[in-house]
Length: 328
Image 1 (tube, rainbow, N blue to C red):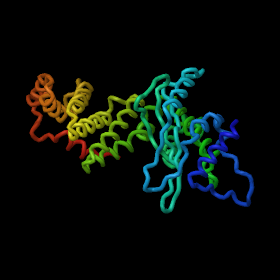
Image 2: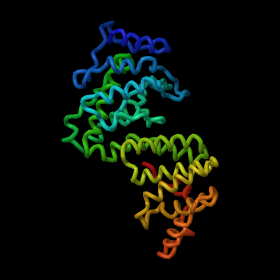
Image 3: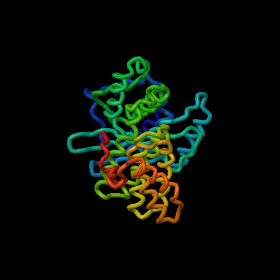
């Protein structure tokens, strides 16, 4: 069964015009070195990846999607697991990206709450070097905790065979799941920012250039990622709400923008000096007036800030805060 599925994966690669790297000397394919370090579930993973492996050029947007019925089957299986997880990491597609002078595999990963159906799942797309950088940073900071965490080793050849891609995909799923199971690592900036910082940076660039519709989709995915990872009270999450509010407002989606401001102000309920409090209050009052919602509480909070001596006239707008915020 596994052999037939792997044959289908090889056919998927070959059928899209991809050519595997030469093995050298015509010998047998080298065994994937990480196979002895990680649980071997190639058959199950190959079933998920079947039909989603493809080749794309630098001009194309890399990515892929998993059919709804396949996701539902994954969630049904996860509920029956002997060791249920709060958060699942599923490689749903692998794209071989060819650029002018390089070629690499881009892995698309869904973050899924165990036993739940997400209409709009949180997703990331990362290559091997991204995972390698995360592994290196975490081992520098958490050497003891990382001692038991397996990571797939680099390969000098045959990186684009179906077998390698399938086994490496499974290795990345296990790698992220293991990291997420360690409390200190799960809360670390290195682990968290691996997921949502690229989206925040991309969304900020798109917002600065006035591409609000594209920025909105990227802010929304960053929102879902932070929600899945349980960091909905951080400064980065407030910045995400600011991005959503600005883009919704620029696209004349005023009710949605108003809702983002309300959520942010709830998170800032006990704050009196947060740099985003004044801008969110001012945006909320303006939007509440536009959509016919009650703005008296925000007006009262804004008045309290004035009486405390905060120079609101010099405060930047929500959009200005968003554009000037350094994201590194």
